[in-house]
Length: 62
Image (cartoon, rainbow, N blue to C red; front, side, top):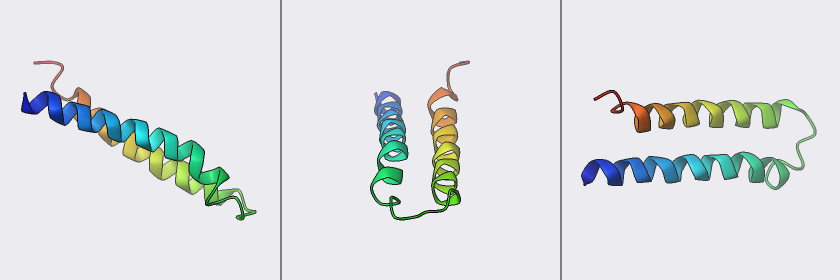
């Protein structure tokens, strides 16, 4: 039961990160005129999503 709850929380985190990848560049970073503001944000969010995916799928082989 605890494992399902943990996977659900990681899944919710993934959804929130994906939503923030779309919302933040067009709201908070809309005044930043250089391209690397969004690129840095998307890079960090991408790394966080990869880590969350690893955490969700680490027990699939068992």
